[in-house]
Amino acid sequence: MRMRNKPWAEEYLLDHDAIVSIGDERKQQITDWFGNNQPIHIEVGSGMGRFITEMAKHNPHINYIGIERDKNVMIRIVEKAVEQNIENLRLLTLDAEKLPEYFQDGEVSRIYLNFSDPWPKTRHAKRRLTHENFLKLYKQVLAEDGEIHFKTDNQHLFEFSLESMSQFGMKLKNINLDLHTNEPEDNIKTEYEEKFSNRGFRINRLEATFK
Ligand SMILES: C[S@@+](CC[C@H](N)C(=O)[O-])C[C@H]1O[C@@H](n2cnc3c(N)ncnc32)[C@H](O)[C@@H]1O
Image 1: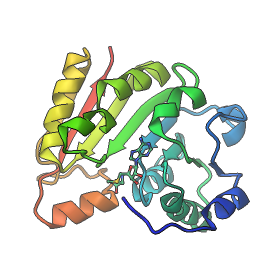
Image 2 (image 1 turned 180 degrees about the horizontal axis):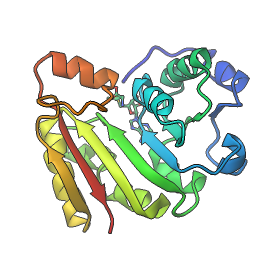
Image 3 (image 1 turned 90 degrees about the vertical axis):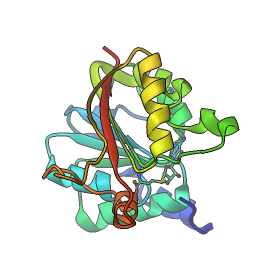
């Protein structure tokens, strides 16, 4: 997702530092950031933030952290979080490569990957968020029984991810090749999900664990 560069983006995010952190290293305990020790679910690549904001509103017993590396995009999530005053949502401007610098080992209970950039060229495969280099990082920050939930309209990325995850020794479950036929009631459509589903693309989904 490309957004026009907003020179005031960093200033805006710093003005909302109670809910959004723009540092690479964490400055406080996550329990202090939320004021409680509820389970932590994160979304990597939150884009405009509909998914993470709606999940947080529907599940107040979970603490959600939306991770988005683009500050210009992050502004849109912060706006939603502020307008709707969502208490169990925090935001992090961070590249997924740096997850272990921010989270402690085993601290996260679930990772959502929604409509991750497909990076179709083979020479860019390492940038795909389901490449084994990223799986290693997820394994480090996820609890032993933690789960990854992944959705994409992109057939090639889905096939790549099935291979990458199974070669990594992950267990895959609830694989769905057409999520919107008999769509589960609790499915929250991301902005990309709605756009590509409306264009007739099938939506793929899977859940994966490292144990
Ligand atoms: C195609 S968009 C999908 C956005 C949203 N999840 C949705 O489904 O509507 C992918 C988003 O992931 C972000 N992203 C890509 N690679 C990332 C990385 N390594 N770390 C953090 N965010 C990343 C991009 O900036 C972009 O906003």
